Image 1 (cartoon, rainbow, N blue to C red):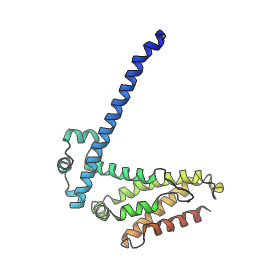
Image 2: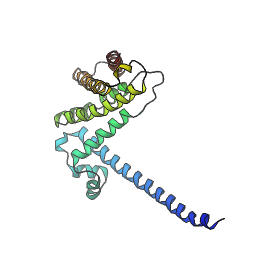
Image 3: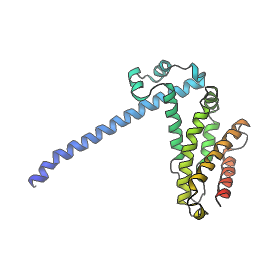
Image 4: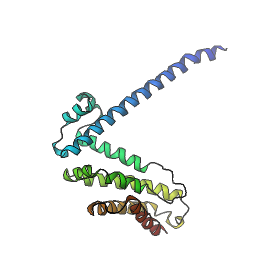
Length: 204
C-alpha cells in the first residue's frame, strides 16, 4: 500500500465518524422536535391553544426548557413548525401512477377531517389564516412543479404557470374551507375529484 493511501485512511475514518455522529445528532433533534410537536397537539385537543403554556408542553414531552428554546422561540413557533411538517408531507412527491393529480388532495382532506379539534383550535386562536397563508405558498410551488412536469395542456402556459399555480392553490384552500364549514359531508375522494376537474379544466 502506498504512503499516500495509508495516510488517507485515518482521514477517511474521521470523516465517516463525523458523518455518523452528525446523523445521530440529526436523529436526536428530529425525535425531540417530534415529541414537542406531539405534546402540543395533544394539549390543543384538550383545551384552547391560548391556554396551553410552554411548561405544559415541556412536561408532556419530557423535554427541558433550555432544549425547547434551542429549537423554538415560543409555542407559536412550535405550532408553525408542526404545520410546516404537515405541509411538507402533503407536498412531497407521491406515487401518481397514471393519475393526473397535482396534489394528494384526498389524503390531505382525510387527515384534516380527522383533526377537527385541531382545526377549530387554530380558528379559535386566530391562527387559521396563518395556516392558510403558509399552505398557499406550499401548494402553489408543488402545483407548479407538477404542471411543469406534465405535457398536458401546459404549452401555452409557459409564462403563466406561476400565476395559474397560485390561483389553483387559493382555490384548493377555498374548497377546504367550504368543505369544513359544511361539516365535511363529501368524501375526501370526491373533493379530490372536484379539485382536479377544476384544475385541469382551468389549465386546458
